[in-house]
Image (cartoon, rainbow, N blue to C red; front, side):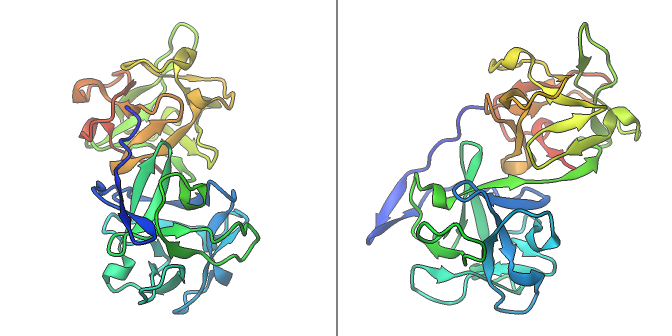
Length: 286
């Protein structure tokens, strides 16, 4: 994928707000949202669903207090509640949990910045921010002006699960059953619940199957490079992130996991390819 276009920022008062942003909130995923600045996760205090409960920073701990759902309707959900911006015209307003109402104060979007994201309210155009330089647990998150380079406004989406990685094409799954010269090829196959389709999705960005990781041979960044499964080594060639429109984006190349020509035949190799918003690049994680 070509590095995502950095949308122009329009000056508004003493700060900046996002303009010309392409909606990217249809991730259809459940997972954690981790701060690029603090290394901690967006957390709901005590896991409470009471209206007004604080949304805060806390050490990533795998609990349900940090599990968010992106259903694709613009909301960002915790259990049966939504991330909510209380009515206020004041920058620095603390965020909270509230019943989901479909209000514009509960409509959020993700703006890509490489493999990270700004998370902002689509009405106010204010971003979710770590206030000041405070990275301690229980620091309450606020909304504030969006600035183009502030890491305190950048977030990483992390999902965890195990099972098939399903293509947008009906009953087609990511597979590793075809043996290559040195490693198994990454291909597609009819979903059949075999071990070669049983992927483990860790928060570290790796996609594991049968003891190996989805890998870009030779750490290539070339368009149309075919993929393989290889001994896990922690390199960026094996790091993947959920991108806009249910894409899977490689950290190193910023290209998307793609089915060539939208083919659906068994054992068709998958590849890196410029992200193009087609069904051939849309995947559902377990």
